[in-house]
Image (cartoon, rainbow, N blue to C red; front, side, top):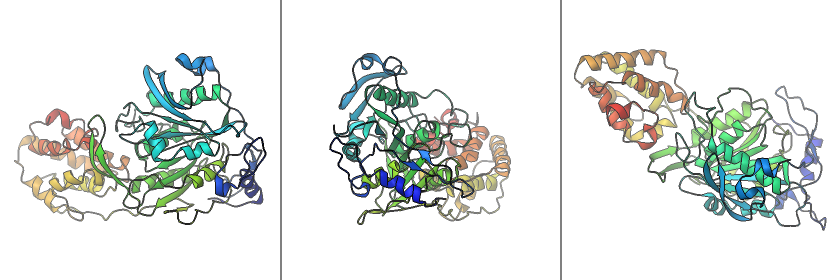
Length: 477
């Protein structure tokens, strides 16, 4: 919930001035210029009260070249353009640096952009037109991934439950890269923002959640929210402001990573809803959401609006009561406050079965798979092969009943029946975990079960999904 105030309005107005030697000003609504002037902003508490104003005066991030830089970068500043051999956590990394024009003085805001699948930093700079950020006073950093991802092999943004707090080389790169840049250039510690699209949107969620005490906010562009937690389960310390975006109802991705993992189709609509609801509900965070006008899987073409909105929410003002800027006429997107909630898919009810456990196994697949807007889209080919349609699982029950009534199948299906009785399915990948866990538990070592082997054979054909069903690789290689 956001409220307007005179103080907050003045805070936004102060961002209209750039810190140039000539002292010229420019309207933030037209230029997105990054301010170095003093401002303050009230923020809204969960009870609707307005907290005391936050001092948003730019403040240089203190960093040490010897401690925060690596290799030659201890002595030599990163250059405008490509920077290579930036070795962090034993990996030689690279990033693109864009510096603002010389007329911008004082500590500068930072925007770190994370690219998508089959891209690198430079390609994302070009595609998302990140030079527009630099032209308005931002220091722009765009690193390149090296395939550290555990569940999607680009950025290490998604982790299985229990592994969230494991060492993360991509987070280490982020920390070093920003601090080393700050050791050589003036960086505003109150205005460090991140953003990315697709796989980069996944990692943006990760950084916002794992580094909330450091970053002020970011742009989550068509990014998976599921499994990006830091594992603490606590509110975001320090608060962040998130702009959650997606291309529209047709925001889907299909493709293959450089190392050969293929996803047949992935819809980002539910993930945008989950992210929007999470940041809206967090007591320290704030968010707005922007839906493209059926642009598909795209970075929304509204950088000037992004910059103005981010700058109105420096560190400590995630829930600032500043008015939301008007989206410029002609922009193919609609933005709004409040959480975006997507309607659930229709329930699928499986009928009775004559073979013990078949109804329960199919109902579990329906509840945690077919009815799940995220996982159901990814598993669409496999669910069809199991006998599912959009509204029925009769084919699944019939397929299950056709398996030989062996002792192995009886045991496996009995296990699925127990799992289904205890399952609590829901939205997102987390909401599908009861099904994933049931397959791994009930089919472990069951190469003698024709039901398990047939199920796993189909799941193994889906490169993106197979990582969530590791037992399948052992019984149906």
